[in-house]
Each structure stands twice: as C-alpha cells, then as structure tokens.
Image 1: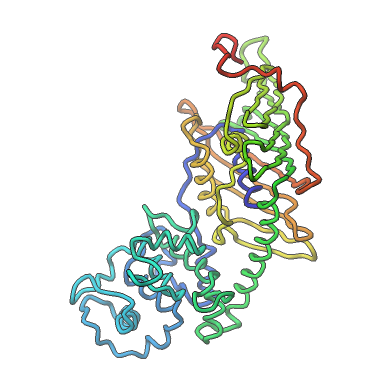
Image 2: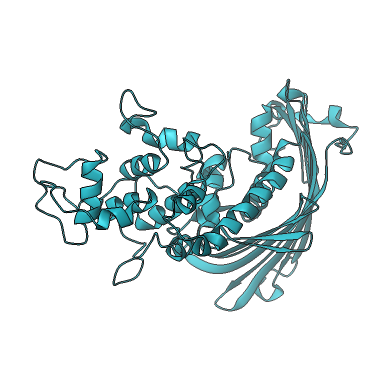
Length: 455
C-alpha cells in the first residue's frame, strides 16, 4: 500500500501540475493516544503541539517511557541543579541518579531550553534500552541515523530543522510500537504493561491498534514486494474562482509494471489512459475556442528507453528505470508506512479500512514532491484538507482513495480545487502482463526533435 498511496498522491499532484506549500503537520491524534495510556499530559494550555519542546518536558517523557514515573516521584531531590521547577525535580533526579542525563553546567539543567530532534531521539533510544557513547549502540551525533535504522525515526514524525511538541507526540507513539533491545518481539508498550508501569486496561485500545497496524503492514508488503503489478486509478478535479466554476477534469489511467530485479533497465512499464477537460463556456471569449478537450495518455518503458505519445507525437529517450518510475509517478523510496500518519484502523469481518490523518499526510506530500523535484512545477498551492483511506480484504490491499482540497495561486489569482483519486489494485504477480504497443520502433529520438516540430 505504500507504493499505491504514493502513486495516488503523485498522480493528483502531477495531474494538477502543482508545487505545494504544505502547512505544519499536526499529530493531535498521537497525543490523544499517548494521553489515553498516561504518557502525554499536556499543559494548562492544552497539548501546545505548535511550539518547541524543552529539556524539562523531555526529561519527564523519558522517565515515563522508562516506566519509572512512580519510582521517580518517591525520590528525594539531591541533584545539584538549582534552576528546576518543583514538578521537574523528580524526573531530573531519577535521570541524574541513573546517569541518563547531564546538566548544562555544574549547577544548571536549563529546563526551559529547547530540546532538539537529536536530543529527543537519544532519549527515546535510551527508553528502548540502547546505550549511547563510543562504546554503546550509537553516538549522539548519529542518533537520528540509528533511530531511522530501527524504525523509530521517519520522514513524517521528525522535523530536524523545526522540531515541535507535535513531533514529540508522533515519535513517542512510534517508540511505543518499536521492539525494546533486550526483548525482540516485545514492543516498548508491551514491556511497560508487563512491568506494571501502564495498566493493561488503559493500554488495550492502543495494543489493538498496533496489532491491526502490523496486519496492515503485512498486507501492504505483498504489494511493495510484487515485481508485477496492475493498478487502475481515476482522477477527478474541479476548480472554481470566487464560487464560479472554472473547469472540471477527469483522468482514468492504468499502470502496469514488470520489474526485472537483476537487470532493472530491462523492466517494462506502461501507463495509459485519457485526460478529459471541460472549461466553463462563460469564461471563453473567443468564438471558436474549445471548451471540451480530450488528450490520450500513453507512456511506456522497456529495454532502458522511455517512450511517450504526447498529442500524437511519438518520442523516445534513453532513461534509467528509476527515472522512468518517477516520470510515471510510481515512487517507492519510502522504507515504511509511518505509524503516526494513521488515525484509525477499523475491522469489519474480512474487510479492514485504514484512515490516514488529514494533517499528517502533508509530510507524505512533501516527500513525494522532494522525489519529483518541484522546479518543473508551476503553481503555488496551499493544501487545506487531505483524506486518504485504504481498503484491505483477504489480507491484500484492494483499493486506495485520496481526496484533496487546495487553494491554487496562479499569476496572483487564487482558485479552489477539489481533487480525488480512486485507485484499485487489479492484480499482482504472475498474472500481470505489461502491454506495449507494436510500433515502438517508429518513435523519434528526442535528440532529433526540433522546437518547430515538438508538440
């Protein structure tokens, strides 16, 4: 499903020709899940997810994730730091006694100083039983890299340049799902329950969520590991300006892939379909101007060559398999489906429906655009809503549906655009045959195409 979701979102963006300005992610649903098990309490002003965390808050979270909050509250404060508030002292005392934190000087802890992504990752790794230092499992300088290697840090839950309490919530929830070092197959949440630090009754809902997430990942892995796939998508869009309809667009496409893992450039790809566009006749001033347009879509790849049939002009160019995949929107650089992006997993009989967090999806959009390269995209877009759902049946991903609402600014004017994509996994495996046209030898090398003859 990782592959399918990225195809779906990429197709929406490519169809619109957009460069997106995504807002900050908001992982309030992660904070809610942490609060349910007693690990994230917020402040008198609420969760305050839009500000940076500080060292005092990070110390408290580490003690809770270690399952030592009750023990810490019984300690007598003897640490040398003189700048702590009363609520911070038990947490810092526990960490100081167990050599898990240092002050910023002999007598200061600087609890109100910002906690960086690197520092918080280090704290989470310690809660998972990993030791830092030259003789440990990782060094502070490499904490983020080590966190990525064990599934703790991902593109969605951590923003190194603007680390917020929002990311603390997302990373902490992810940490609860990661196995502790000393007990492979046992997640941090399971260990905290076993140790009595979190009540089973409070953890039951989150444990069920994790179990369903694991089942979903097993289903998704079938698609990501498949060397042959056949996926259909239907993209629909409607644009308006100040309440007046500008245009509607419909684009059904089918993508087929047959990957040769030993010789990737000998793989075969095909993306075919039709783009239909209707322009509001009231906006057309020229008497003979077209208001309805239909453009065939035909892109192919085989034997290290990319073929494109654009407006009847058939051109080809040498291209690596990876670049061809990017051109067609099938970007597979994600290593995992970030846990923090998923808001709900509902099971009804043999059908599972996975609902993604609307705000958290912005990180995935940023990831896609980073892979696509936004230099070629021409508009500026502010995403306002993203709704994404995946359907699993028979332990296989069957469909992915994405809807976006966005404000698009072109030449100083802003229009509202609603776009949806409905994707269906038609087949995976040996039953898939990539259909290529028989006239590929008639395509013209792009190096021989002059500007005057280009479509």
